[in-house]
Amino acid sequence: PTARLRQIKSQSALNKVTDYYAKVIVSFIRTVLEIVPVSVFAILMEIVDIKERRLKQLPVKVEIDNLLEYAQLDERHKLAMLTQELSIFTEGILAMEKTAIGRDVINPRNILEDGLRKELVRQCCAALHHNLQFQFNIDALPQHQAACIRSLSTLAGRMDGFRSAIEYIQDFIDIPGLMMWGEEVARIIGYNVEQEANKYLLKKVFDFESKYQTAAAPIPNYPRTESDPLCVNFMGRTVSTLLKMTDAQTTIFSRECSGWFLADGQEVCGFRTISLLRRAIGVCGLSGIDKLLSFRIMHELHRFVKFFKTTVKKQGVLLEQIRDGLFPEWRIPANDSIGFYASATKKTEMLMMPVMTCLRRVGQAQLLRKMIHNELQTCARIDASKLQHTLSTLNEAIMSNAMVSCRTTNDNVLSEKSINGIQEVRDLIDTMGEGDPISTAFLQIDPLEGLPVLLALFVISYMPKFKYDSDFGALVRSNEGYPIDGWPVVVGMATLLKQFHPSYTDSVLAYLGQYVRSSIYSSSSRKQSKKEDAPHLSETATHTLIFACHLCSISKVPRSVLYEKIPQYLIEICAQH
Image (tube, rainbow, N blue to C red; front, side, top):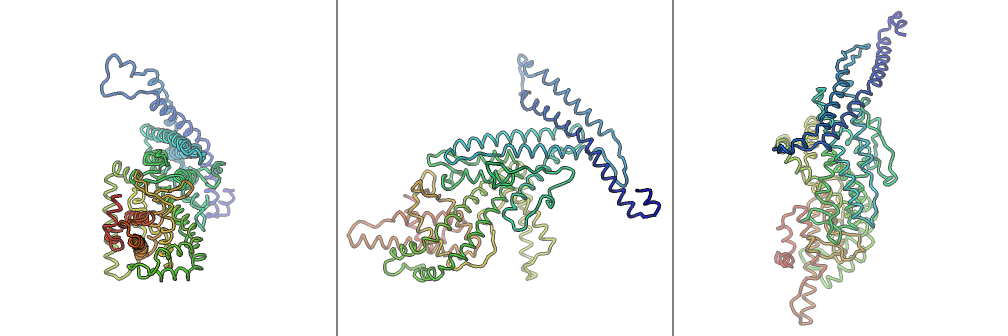
């Protein structure tokens, strides 16, 4: 066809046809030469197996009697033979010269690099897919946790082998192996996070639209597993397993111990689990889990707002009457204050279960994000301290410049260039684990009238179902049948209040302080009428006081704010007991 196009002198059509056939030929050449990277990678895995499992690590000093034992001549001879075989494969590709086909130029080095990338992506995706499949049984949580640890350990060893293989090859074919490894793993994680997050998005990102997919090294798609059919890929299964392992209905979170435990004190998930997870899926994987948890939190908060506007709003008159009965917050309600609270919690009882479900789920996801951020921060301080300090300084400089610009120009809108720069820095900061997950603003919504009253009544109505455990340093369920845990509810409420003006937090603390003072006053009145000993705090009031202290601690609200609502000596007495 090109001869006919030349005859009619159609240069534009000739270029298009030439480009098409050139691409077809280049694709055919890549397909033929693909066996070389596959063979190279297979040899590399054998080399890594010898280096990691068979060769003994040489100590600093070796005794003459043990020299033969450490020599391992057979293994080292096989290693040398495999290395020579590897060099023969790569030498054949690199000996090829650049060839022009049409307007395209074939570079053998690029073909080799693209083939290695493709094989690396295929091997990594297969390892991630097959190892991150979990069988969960709520009745055998310790056994399930042990199986998860074994799967993560196997995957960590496998991924370390891939990394060693690609690092080993760069010395022979002059290709930046570690950079290739980092780019491809980040691309795999980013693609799977993007596809898993589609369930939370109205506008889906399909496979052919993904910015992470490339024709040279496509990321394969695997079918959903029978064990977790709701999850699209391994990232979703990992998040789902973490949520099942740390479910507030079966576990207890201890802030002091930084982990989730069973009632008998056995640890289910802690720093060691998160550290092993980082070894298995890398820093990019932990950052991807953090993003998926953020999507889940935002989804739960949207559901809560919808519930409030559709169901709670119908009880607006009731909430307004309760708020009027509690006004002002600095004064104890008139007449029978305890009876007033009992009546109010009884009338709003039908609203409490959805509130509890939302707070429990949001709090659980936030605690997992907190653990992930701590692990990322620790790794950044050890492995990339200079980068961490640079990003911290850059972040402060950007914030300072933005505030100065807003003051001088009286304009709160930043330029597009500034926004793009801030987004790039933000992504790096998230990867470093900087920032407080509890302070994240997920929603931008209008004020919800009556929310502080509803949350205060929720705390008052659920405190009898808690007891304080000094070993865990937390409020725990008083009965095994209660599907609640103290810290997830506290963190969930703190996250919800962060979506609104700080006055909402102040109002909730004021209502809780008013309840504690009312309980003491009621108890004092009964003791005086019966001429008994000095009054003491009831269990519900004590738990409410502990809840308020935990809420201030996790929300970073100064204790002085709480002392304005509750006398300081009451908090100190409660702390002593």
